Image (cartoon, rainbow, N blue to C red; front, side, top):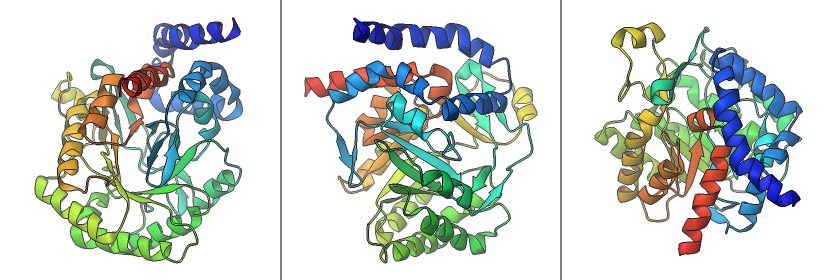
Length: 361
């Protein structure tokens, strides 16, 4: 009876209450204010994840692990970098049932990021625009928190450079974060594609990218445990640029790609140019990125070795979006904007659909 009630709560009541009651109230406040309020609860009342995730745990026990990147993921679904920047809510997401959380972007020194307002909702299109600017507490504070990391969840470390660090010196910042986080995370994501750090995306050129990735793989060679390194790429790369990235990735010996980051383009939006100009610069995420991200995954799959891991990210708002990424060739799928719009019931939908897919095989 208790289990049946728990299933009813997580499958029916939680999604309904979130969408009909909580989301309309939350969306009255600024997006960043809501983020801070929710993460207060995520951090200090993590057992809420247990209550909401009762049915998710039952579903997960029925699923085979996804073995990729040399790691056993409970299932393919995780939290993308940028949501839990300072590793404050790992326990909550674990309790909810996510297989992995990517923290960060982490920089060597803490920084406030870009001036506010810097996060904007576009509800007509289930999208966000952000220009956060790698706001985070810095490597030392995050390492201190990760020393008490919970078990039962895979943690990725998304690493970047400080805004004040020049592109010429960026390799030092990436190496610092890589070495500092190495004992505490399970895999790394190199972020040179965020559009909200001035000139950062220029590091996606062949020479700079090779310099950064080769430095990280060199550091890794001296570690007792080999941890995967992935590169997060922009959806705004041309095909020629993408081909160059693939060449560098394969020659550097890193282990995977995350496709994709946010976009500087303003595609598929039901907003006027004036409204978008008032918002200003920033990376677009959410439903408008679904197709472009999937197309890029499909292209990568056609150019990469069959077993080369790709994590799909961008425009995952529904279970159909997630399985579109998997069908295109992604082994794992990350959510961010979809979680904000759909709430915690989104994971239940993903797990139920994945169970059906597994049972058909």
